[in-house]
Length: 109
Length: 109
Image (cartoon, rainbow over all chains, first blue to last red; front, side):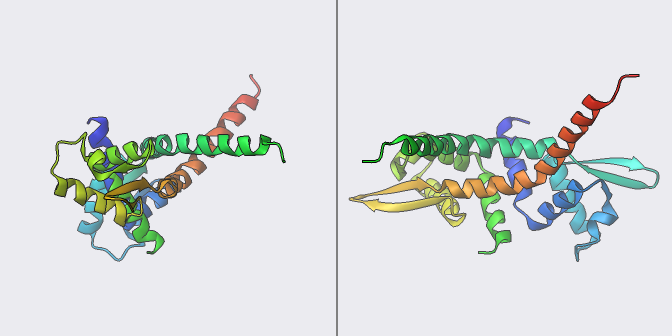
């Protein structure tokens, strides 16, 4: 997966309220598919489809635990998505900071 | 626009390499539509469509300047998109930090 398709899949996965809510839930701890489905008025296939999108974006991992499958959030992928946004805003913020410092130093006339 | 559709539109707008490249370009300064189109092998309607998606997400503003229209990036919207990602990762990062501190303090046996 190139970095480009990487970010396409990541931001695409985040562009949905159900998927963001699943991410928020997994942020508090691992969960079964049934647990993830519980707060949503959605069919099992509909939730499964969202989980597959999250998986394809590298945001979710599943492992077998007895008869259940446990889902885990791959937080490092959220950090990766945050990084590009950070890069786009840090130059601007540092410029604003520098401007602020400059104005602070400006002698009053 | 509710916060929910807000983030849907924002992350949806970011899920495309051409639109991210336009954002990167506008991060270096305002530009005309022709300037934004220049690095992309794309028709004017194709670029316009991307600009409309960015506009709908609140990421882009246009103003008239003589015969041209100048595009400006609304960086505060990138900051908004970053915030949700930050919220999802900061708890985890603070937990990792706390764990690190705990391990540092652990007496050697």
